[in-house]
Image (spheres, protein in one colour):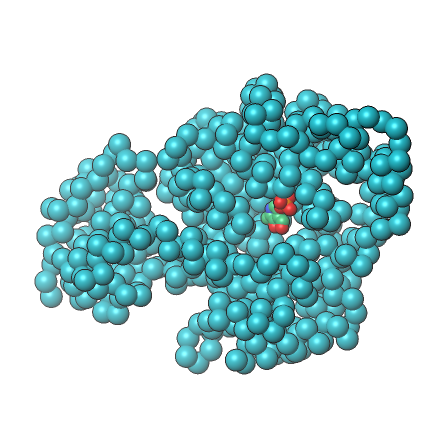
Length: 489
Ligand SMILES: Cc1ncc(COP(=O)(O)O)c(C=O)c1O
């Protein structure tokens, strides 16, 4: 069995923004694609390559693990590590240059094609609140009241940072319900989470910055950040949320960590207290920013929610993000971000230059909705309704799929994840299944689409479905039947 002298040809550039283990992965993939390494070739031992590259053995081990996971290498115990006999995708010498040139772009295109469920309210759409249960009458009364009133501000340019009384309401609400201590000046109203991200990037990011990103993680944010030029380093998530130790080992000096601590998107786990402390400690030491996406923590069905990560932030490293899309409705396009104290002036300047603000009328109506107690009442009602609807959908899917799926009853949020068990011929192609479900009129997303690296072996296959709009057991059974037909092909 030939042992390659590849170690002699690998070069690592410590000035490159990419972490060393990723550089090693890239060099191996390029060598395989170029035909310098062939199926069955033995690759250098960990220690040898580490010495050669003057790096830690753990760094090389990490790179090898990724390459094994992605199907490029195989570990055969004491015999060593080898280039796989069956390489992933179309890795051929002739494809070498092309694949390297296209390495990033197709990944994003693939993700966007596989994640496009349009904008309308099709059944099972993840993250869409119960449209049938929104108190439309109260809402129209409040909007009409503001529209009829004589306040000239209704017709003038809004404050780009947000309508002051709404900022005040949000600051109070966050203090009481999420443990986030902030003043209204820190709260900036935006037109959605991606607008929030844009503000954050303009405030803090430099070209080529790297960021920890949960794997799997919120795909719309991922696509946005990749398009914006951020270098995302996928970080594993387990039953305690983001694995901070592994993330630190993989890339200790990333500038950002994008996390969903209350209810991991999409898996639904909660970041444990121990991990929260580790994450904050890392950010303080590294001088990095944690972007906390607290998108649906209001809906919790078991026990009391942990306060926001921001509530533990003693060093002003957490940028807290919230939205009215789940607690009210997404057509509002109203979200918010709590700026770190040291960045309030900067955020103020950026909002002035970046956008012309959000419509005054809706901001004022939301402020009234909160002030008059409708918000608290609506949340209470939705908690009870969603707890019931999640059971309806989960039971219906389990009945339709039998032992082909497993579902953990969600402890919060508005979606559930059904994980497909591998079939006799290997893992189920969840992308194809979800595409068939979409053709049948359902807004379903494949779980593997939420991974930056959806090809890796550890990727879970399944579907992510929203339960908030499932009206009753009959509807749940009908939708589960449609899902089963899409699964059967
Ligand atoms: C993980 C996650 N973050 C944030 C949001 C909120 O996005 P927006 O405020 O743009 O509606 C969503 C909505 O689906 C989400 O799923």
